[in-house]
Structure formats: structure tokens, C-alpha cells
Image (cartoon, rainbow, N blue to C red; front, side):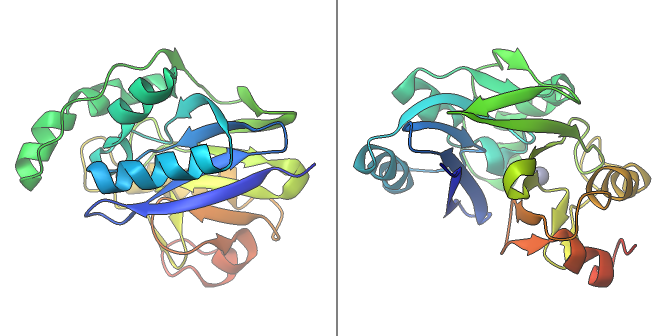
Length: 214
Ligand SMILES: [Zn+2]
């Protein structure tokens, strides 16, 4: 009974929202970036069409493009929000950051639970491990499912790129260290699902990533 991953690309920042689910019909929603009624409907139609039961809303980090749909998702399915504690000021700045971009977004509700390095969470019978991967944002976390060599990497590592480090709390040396010690130590065949763009693998990035190479 495999863990299945569905992806959506939402909002003006082209952010990837992921749903993890399995035959038990339980699902978790990661980084809900849906913005506006059409994208909210797309997410809701997928969940209802498959008869899924959302149980958690989990954030890799709290940048505006990853949290635009938090309020809708939390209210629609009455879900607890999970993230790293260091993302609190980032989440609280959502409305102010939206004003800077000229995009009206209400600040999402606060997190209900904090996740830290080594914590786990489950989707049906599948257990994912939390990796602490700061640098793009102070409390960036990634989610690893070893049994299927699957990694949700947020904006830490991209296909051919890495997360930007010029936003508040970002730091290149910290990001590079996260990638080298937490991600490049995973098996080469691990599939990496990032917060933007197409998926990649650890091996491909170790060999060819122009910013952080093995
Ligand atoms: Zn980000």
C-alpha cells in the first residue's frame, strides 16, 4: 500500500502544493498555496473526488506563497497546522509581506503544533521523518519517507537550483550546510519534490547543481 503524492501549482509565485495520501483515504496537505476561489475549488475537488480525509496541514516554511491557502484549508477541514517554531515571525509577517508585493493576504491562523528535527508524522500507515534544513528561511524543514525514497524539500533544493537566501532570516552558509549534511547524505535515488518547479533526484543535484555540488 504505497504512499501517493499529488501536486498542484498555485498562486502568482507558481508554488507547489502537495497532498500525501494512501488507501486508508487519510491525507495531509503540505504548503497550501491556493489563492482565490478557483484554486481553492481545484484543491477541494481533488480531495472530495478521491474521498480523502485531511488530518493535518503541514508547512515546510511560512513564506507567503506557501501559506496563502492556510486559512481556507484549516477552516474547510478543521485541521491543525504544523510547522517549525522558528517560522513563527515569518508566518506572522504574511499580511505585511503581501502588502509589499501588492497581494492582499490575511495572516494565517497560528500554528497548533511545532515540528523539530527527528520528529515524525504519519499518513495512514506511512511514517515520514522531519529534517531540519534552515537557510532559505530560519525554520525550513523537509520531510523524508525512506520506504519510497521520497523527499518533500520545500524551497531548500530545486531542480538545478537552491532556495534564495536574501529574504529575512535567510543565510547562504546555513543553506549550503543543510543541503550538504541533511540532503546530500540521502541515497542518490531519492526523488526530491520542491516548492517550485519540477521534481529532481538527490543524485542529479549532487552531480550537477550549479550552486551546491558534492
Ligand atoms: Zn520560500
